[in-house]
Length: 159
Image 1: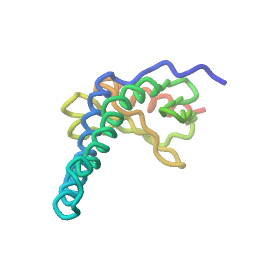
Image 2: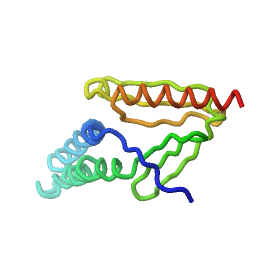
Image 3: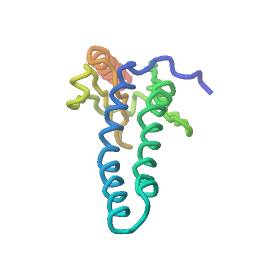
């Protein structure tokens, strides 16, 4: 098996993933708070039992916002080789994808509002099997990666 890919995502990815994790947990926290309030108010349970759903969501938030982004960032790696793009990602189940450059049809960059705020972009390259992406690269690095993949893929087409 080939060595682990050498390139890492931008470290700001961890902050972005923490913010998006928090935004995804907010509705769950509100729902847990309302459920706890309803249990205390109408169910006749003690306050301690009523706060349990909210505490469970807070504990989940500790994992989703506190631990997972750092672990995810440490695992996410990529490398652009003359014949392929090598992607590695995952926390517990690590996935390794080798995409032959000859199969790449087109490549582009994307940037959502939060990514724009942090100066990050995602490189997306498409094959007949579907899209693959390298997320959370600094915008100048993403442009270089996009151009490099496009040039290498073009060279593969000419062979």
